Amino acid sequence: MSEALRVGIAGLGTVGASVLKILRDKGEMLTRQCGKEIIVTAVSARDAKRDRGVDFSSATWFDDPIALARSNNIDVFIELIGGDEGPARASVEAALRSGRHVVTANKALLAKHGVALAKIAEDKGVLLNFEAAVAGGIPVIKALRESLTGNTVSRVYGIMNGTCNYILTRMWDEGISFEDCLADAQRLGYAEADPTFDIEGNDTAHKLAILTSLAFGTQIAADDIYLEGISNISLADIKAADELGYRIKLLGVALKTDSGIEQRVHPTMVPVESVIAQVHGVTNAVAIETDLLGELLLSGPGAGGAATASAVIGDLADIAKSRPGFQHGPVFGTPAKALAPYKRARMRAHEGGYFIRLTVHDRAGVFAAIAKRMADNDISLESIVQRQSAHDQPEATKTVILVTHETTEAAVKKALEGIVKDGHATDKPQMIRIERAG
Image (cartoon, rainbow, N blue to C red):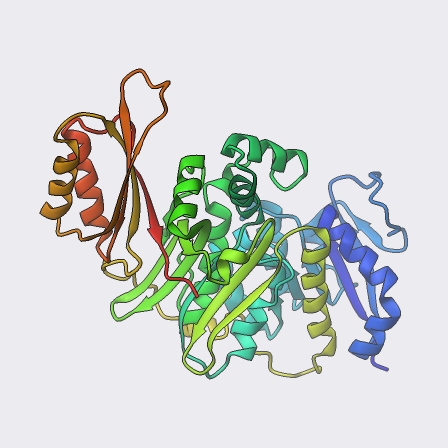
């Protein structure tokens, strides 16, 4: 049997402790599967005295994760600190420059510095593995980087944030308001005390940026993603979508067009009969459209200690199985130096159309004025529904729901601006894209 693989772990929170437990409880099985023993020889965290429910007393303690990353007593550095700068970035760079393999679950770090880190890893001939950074335990990174080699990917999209999917599922399933669902998610540990990063779409954007690079061989462009969260989704939107045969999901979508790459994160209506509409609760799902296989859908636990730790262990096992001196494949599927500059796609018509909800004054001529604004912007309507609004409104209002055919976002926004300018709308109009998801 080969010499043991020595591992250093920086960050002993929920995921780090789960990794330690798996290595302890499944050590013999992993040794058989990998052909060598995997030993945690060093650890680092903020508090050495904190009880983490697992014994790591045999490992050397480092107060400084950077010193751990440079230690000659490890072969692999596992970074579970978090954050796109500070000790996370410094320790990963130190490990790579010292010729250590790296496993990380840090999507923020990769979205900001992934290409630069990939160049270091490839220059040093070491592995930088990050399956746990996107969609928890779902092996989407391995699929794009290895399994789909030879396929041309045209679109990647999916549900990549369990917090948002949990909230939207509860709103639809139980008729509970966004605010109450969020409070429950926080109480159950699905949402942070400050949930902004999740509910405003930033978490999904980081993951999408990484998948875009893998799918299309481009440099990461996390700052070039259209971003819209779910905090403005109301029960009225959920109910209207249901009546029209749709579910609302927060999707990350990356699409390759003739003019470049389109990246967007926003609430989306998907047909109720589609597979993606059946992904409920904290589950994640990523769909990959290819020329050879058609559409591939990967679904499973997207977060949590066990799911993320499973992905970390998988990355660690890949390193343990690699042969000494073997030339490792590129970090993002394409050599970092050959990744194409990111080119943003030109604005085009959205094939799925748009859902528009308007609350307007209940008076003569309003509906005709709305229709005129739509026609003036060359927007063709698929359906129109009018409802009387709640009786407790200070003035009689109506809810008008429009579903458009294929059109551009610029046209829709211009029409809505005109309706507001005309003084017909009593609230800010709601606009949600409709995705013809598989």
